[in-house]
Image 1 (cartoon, rainbow, N blue to C red):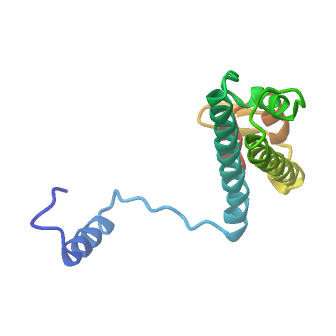
Image 2 (cartoon, rainbow, N blue to C red; image 1 turned 180 degrees about the vertical axis):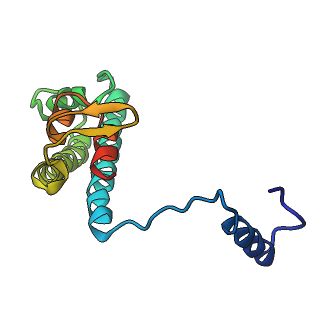
Length: 161
């Protein structure tokens, strides 16, 4: 439906009423509280992973300013930490306490992500059964799919269907 006239609440309400009366209109069912709670675990986990990535990038960026070059990626975080914690590193003494704040934040984030992973693993979201979704058949526990390299996005879609 093409917009008619300027955008006003009355025009919006009229368009919504017209669309709702069409026979081809499909409505999304309301999610249960259990589904909302399960989805929240995944959303919080993703937030913490983004924060972990920010902290790693900040640490890598600050060390780059002092000539310490480390490749990108969470897998190289241990190299960044080792540089800061090396007692014989050539970093300025004033920078080390600040960099250790980032290292402490990384440790805290890793612990919280681990707790959420455990919560996901032991919750009822990962009940074993075969699932048919988008033409793909998933057999076995959902957690094993996740641990065996299935993308988290697929696991989330299957868990929250």
